Amino acid sequence: MFDEFQKIGKYLFQEGLVNSHGGSLSIREGDKIFITRRGCMLGEFKKEDILELPLELKEKNDQAAQDLSIHRTIYRDTQAKAVIHAHPASAVAISITDNKVVPQDAEGSQLFRSAPIVRGRDEVGAEETANLVPTFFVGGSVIIVVKGHGSFAIGKTLEEAYSYTSALENSCKIIVAVRASGGRQPHREKPDQAPRQPLHQRSMHHQRSGIPPGIGVMDRSRYNKR
Image 1: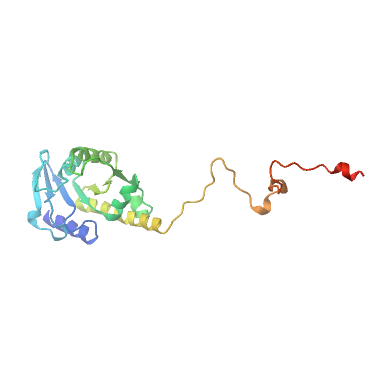
Image 2: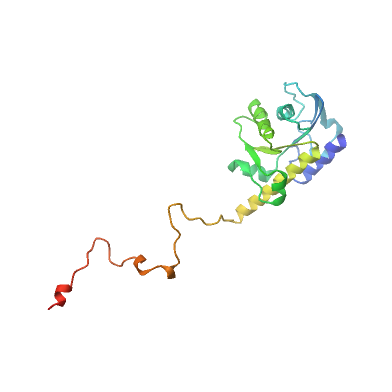
């Protein structure tokens, strides 16, 4: 168990998916949860950084990760065996403006299709957010993003949850790059506007008159009879 925590924690830090003392990992074994200690360095993981806690106990634990309540409710409401909470910068940036992350790359589309963005009114460790997050996993998602905070991914193993976390950030980097480059959407005519014909195809009667509106044309026929 320790080797797996250490390996995945190191990968998360090296890839920039967590900062020096951010993020959390957990696995479930029966009625117990093994979760990282609050404020530990995932890139320099130690054996004492893993805490063993009862799954059903709802009281806060000052030593455990701040989002312990979210890990517990995910295990309570889903079949997940592992949970990773990370702080992928590009995904967090997109969570501030978008309602969900829809990958534009093939790998992301195959791995997670889309990642809902959860908007809680309270801090991430609050009961509201803790109860809200699992509902998206019950609906079929494998990874979600809490607005302005970070991602939560589930899996049968920590490695599987890590694969979703890594793919999410890669997809978000691509989205950010496309937006930064000024990528455009295909031009669409307005619904009530017919497509304009090329200039050389327009008939003469479609051309705008040079006479200002409201000014009549003088009838010169009687003058021509003289």
